[in-house]
Figure 1: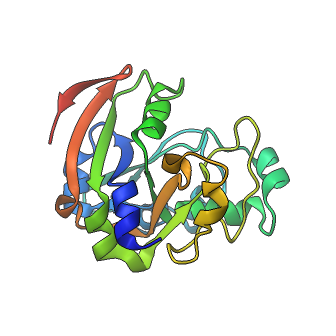
Figure 2 (figure 1 turned 60 degrees about the horizontal axis):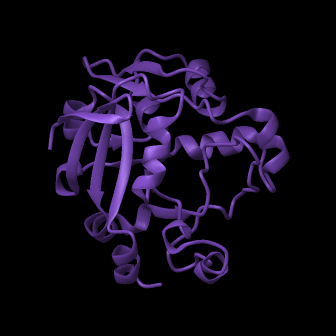
Length: 219
């Protein structure tokens, strides 16, 4: 599949963040957990290691030493026991570290809606961002990988995963998944390594959601 065909099938990317994160995102971009932890001046090396290699049952506030506050999102849908069963060529520490090195986007609004309705998140305000796929692909293609599963969840029947789960567009086995799934679900996630710094160049929508409905339009 060409980049043009991919963007035609998936014209928008969706991301959920802390409800008050918009000013920080405009200033710093969307940051991976690894990027946030790396900017901290206060965390000990052991705390940094733990935050990036162990499952986070709750969100964690991190400060960079310059008055900037960031929040590491929780990893509630992920469990070590299930990971041990579904990982093929990695151990849980490696998988969690890999997830923490990336910024994640859904490729369908339906996937986003499921997350907004989830018990863990529906009773808290959430910032929902909508980005243009074509500009993200054009400017950050070297750091982009795509994925056929919800990589941060092991709920229900955990799908097998490993080093080959995240793939470049050119190497992705579209023909395999097109035989099994509707077109919108052939790719589930798009990820960017490290950070997406130029958010204003890509974002076409920013809204605050609470209890499964939009309560404020920012952009």
